[in-house]
Image (cartoon, rainbow, N blue to C red; front, top):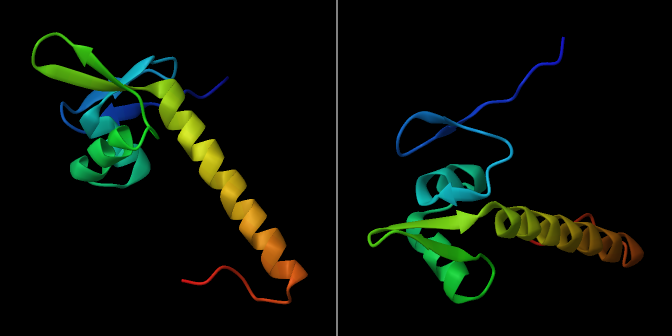
Length: 93
């Protein structure tokens, strides 16, 4: 039996399907662990794609969330590799 992973929409406490195309802002907050204002700053910087859903609602494309996560994973891996080349223990915190 294959287990299904169910995420909850933080704003509405409803399940979010894995094949979702657009996440509500509250879901992105919980997925990335950042604040609402940070999400909007990421949109302004071009790191996330915002889509209007009607007059008063917005969402972030799932593709842009996943792409941002992949970019950050690569950046971290590159930083770790560079640290090893220079004999450091890891990235500076």
